Image (cartoon, rainbow, N blue to C red; front, side, top):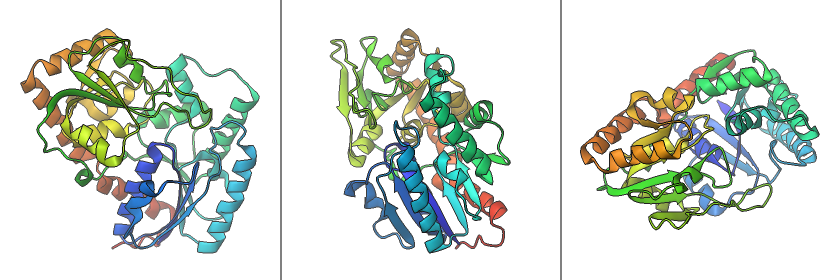
Length: 368
């Protein structure tokens, strides 16, 4: 079976793509991978070394949520059509809304990773006001959803947001994201430290909540400050707290080490369709303290501790609870680790996607 997969290189979708493509190839699927956003750096592509049957075609076309992207989107759709005509795939696995409306007869699986309107509601409390840009964006998403044969989302909550804001697709499914446990390290001795990972410029990640108080333990905040579209830096400071350390963007090896050493992970997001960083923390045997939003409840159930939604004082209290009681901290770390191994691995994720492939392209799914 041959599948064309689209991706972008600017955030968590790239990590998701790594897990998807690596596991698909292991199962005998031939993949043509087309990326948008920025041309990826060599370090971002290292995971493809040694992978057979991956035809990688990077581009620098703008993404659908960016300002002034119309010309790039049209050009990128033409390019993607040329790829489809070239490789003649059995299925398109699309990770951007725009290409759901691609004019071709190949079955299309569209994955709704996130969207601007549900992000805006989570951050601002109501829908964005009409404007040329937001009206155009809504139209892009609605047409993409309507053009896809099936729409998948990484959580029930995210699928509900798609239906609420853009309409019900012809067919839908929930496929939880997954990570390869072998890429994380749950075996190092833990330090009395808190870790949080998230783009500092993204209000949806809400990492600034950790700067509202002097933490009871060393706290490491990882993430880029620079917005990829607007070119503006986030304005977040530690307010003089000596235990807060901003680590900036980290390499994969550096981040793996931080996850392995931290005892506690703070999942602060107010908007989260899934959340790969908390999953990486769980696979590293961190205890999870999560913002009390529907997605985290759906994914982690009783295996995480929750703080009152967007409440810094409640977050501080839960951090104190775990960092002052190693036995409770270890118990929650074990619970999160077990849940991640059971529900959120790349192997299980691709099992679910192959089932959808079989529905969309019957008799073409032949895997090893």
